[in-house]
Length: 548
Ligand SMILES: *Cc1c(COP(=O)(O)O)cnc(C)c1O
Image (cartoon, rainbow, N blue to C red; front, side, top):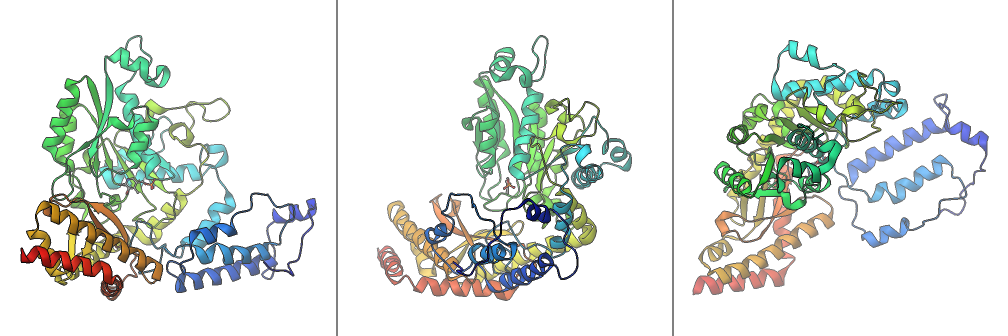
């Protein structure tokens, strides 16, 4: 604590000052702003995952539940934030931070985001956003066209139509997925005869009216956990989210999907939506979307594609074929805050049919009047920021070919890293990159041979030791603070579906070099040596298996 800290009096005049635009190049606030930019830049250069300080120590800095009685100077408080918060946050834009979908941001977004904060527009209605509303509708139109490639006439007809909506801008993929399934549910249980629709009468009466024993949403075993939340809040129940078997490449088996649907129907359970994953969160694989679309057409199911992470691949004419069939989806989720390099809080759901969202339309008297162009009548969220502006700006400043370069270099870097891993005698590539995501683990050659030869019991034992080692390496590497990979659990066919901990790498930062990737492996190999007891147990068991 700084003892000489100056104090401020609580006065209405000083409160008025904080709402006034700071004047002059040498006003205090301007100076603070400059200092802050410098400090942040320095932080962004020097730290990766800030020096490891146990969370319980950090918690001590954030343990006071009393709202301060004494105001602080902005300058003092800024220093406080730098010391306690910034210094202990995670440097997600470091080139050696390759573990998550949250990545580096282009610098032009920092000054531009001030426009958004300063104007503080509320996109829920025109009265509080004016030009931001058509801008957001245009952004939705752009993404819609990226997926569905309709013609000019289509977009001039629907993009700004008051009674239609090409999609919804929201805080992220979770809300986007919930919105898509909300629309699908309401369309499946729509008004019929004297039944007023699920949105008016609720699920219980809808089930009785339609004669269903339950509802189901089908997705591969690799579906994102946000879908469970969706099934829960929509009243389907988490057990109504039915997992379907995947093949060795983590893609849904269309035959198994078809069988599951028949099974459910035989129990009078209505499978109303099927979800294709275009870029699974754990392995980056893409479901066979065309085959899934056929099943959905046959079964009259809503076909949703969760392309929260992988959807940006459509920007690349060289790789968009990987998502072939996405244009057949009734709805698609894309997160601009993943591979479109936008700050957090930029999810989108797009609907093929401009009428689709009518089933969730809401109106209120003082806002969202019928026939108005208020975006709030088709969104789950109420008040929303002008985040679409940053997507709009990036589309113009980076442009489609610019994004293509970014996407291509990420995928090519992942291929490089995969081949580098395959050349090592002591690493094993667990999942090949289809996009820019791959998984692998540390496993010396002789241990691999032992694992292949072992009886099921011994294999399980050896694999558990390897899992411990993977966990140790991943944690120690993070704590050392030079680089960061994440870890996840897979069940590789090759190892008879044993529970396998793996390193997970997402290559999105254009500043990540091949040299950095080589060093990541070197560091992991070195860290393995820092667990001599574990390594000895692994070697001992391997030798025993190989000798038997
Ligand atoms: C990230 C992700 C989500 C969830 O998105 P949020 O923006 O975190 O809410 C959903 N599905 C997939 C496939 C994702 O990768």
